[in-house]
Every structure is written in structure tokens, then in C-alpha cells.
Image 1: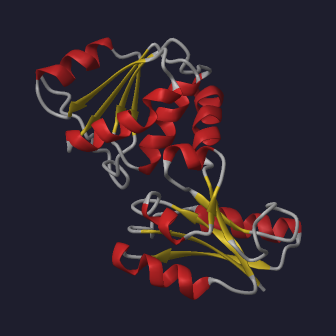
Image 2: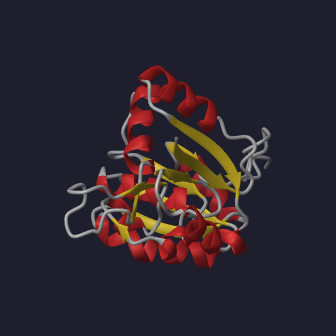
Amino acid sequence: MQRAYVIGSPIAHSLSPAIHNAAFAALGIDASYEAVEVLPADLGDWVARIRGEGLLGFSVTIPHKERIVAYLDQVEGDAQHIGAVSAVVVSRPGSHPGTMPGALVGTSTDVPGFRRSLWEEARITLQGQRVLLVGAGGAARAIALVGLQDGAGQLWIANRHEDRAQALMADLAPRGPETATEALPLVGERIREVLRQATVVVNATSVGLRSQESPLDLVG
């Protein structure tokens, strides 16, 4: 039986195993998909251990999307631009020119996934929008790239640690030179001003993952 996984911490909330195992069954694929709790300190050892025959690949979620890059053989597509990976596939003969079969190749499904869900669920794109992005991790990097690629009029990135938001902006701003950009902290008068101006607000933090909490103080 072939093997596939989703890794993260926390991971018990993930619906991915139910979705993927149902798809495997419907398609007659002899494979299993399992959610695995992997702590940041154990990430390298886990990747080394699961390599081998029968591995299809694995999905990557909080907090590993950026860290996983160091343990892969190749990163492709938008994942190269954002420095974050959401899916890892095993290279097959001819599937990735220049890469040995069995190599682990990282890609980003977050970029096309966010763009598609934004259109399907809200019937909008980020073109011309004033976007407030909360968070500066791997998922935030993918969403920021969508905003820059699609021509957002303004992109604000707010994060608890403002230096991370500034670093993200510095990395990606050249991808959308026509978009005005600003990094800012999560607290203070400036974030309240931005909230009043934003036309789209995206939460890319882990806050609210298992609750109805918001990373922003919406009072006042």
C-alpha cells in the first residue's frame, strides 16, 4: 500500500485524511493518508524516516511550511518565490527533469488554492483591492504573492512581530511593483486606521483555528 500524510502541530483537527482516503477509495487507489503530529524539533528526522518505496507524498501545514524547505531535494513554482511549501511529491521517472526519481519536490498549492477559493466563495479577485493580511508565516506568504501577482492596489501586512512582516514584504514586494505595500504591528492606532480602509481582510495566523477568536482587537 502506498502512503501519504499531512504533517503539522497541531494536526488533530485536520479533515484531510477523511477527504483523501475517500478519494483513494473512490478511485480504486491502494493508498492510505494519515495525519501526523510532528514537532518542529523533529521535522528533519521525520522527513528522513518516511523517504522510501511506497511514499506518494505529504501535505504540510502550520508550523512547517517554511521550515520544510531545508529538508527537500527541490522546490518548484510559486514555492520558490514565497519560500514556503504546502505539498511535497515524490519525483517519478520523467516527472521532474533534472531530478532523480525518489526525490522530494516541494510546491505550493496555497497560491492557486486561495485565488480559486476567493473567486468561488466571494466572486472577487484581489485586483485593485485594499488588502489587509494578518500574519507573516507560510500561508501569509502565499496570500501576499496572490495580492502582488493579481495587482492589489494596496497590501498591508500586520503581524505580532513586525520585523517578520517587514521581512516578508522585502522578499515579495518586487513581485508586484505596482502595489503599494506597508508592514505594521497588530496593535496601535495604525492598525485601526487600516481596518477602516481595507476592502479585504485575510487572517493567515493560527488564531481561530479551533475557535471563533480573532487575531485583531476589533473593539474601539
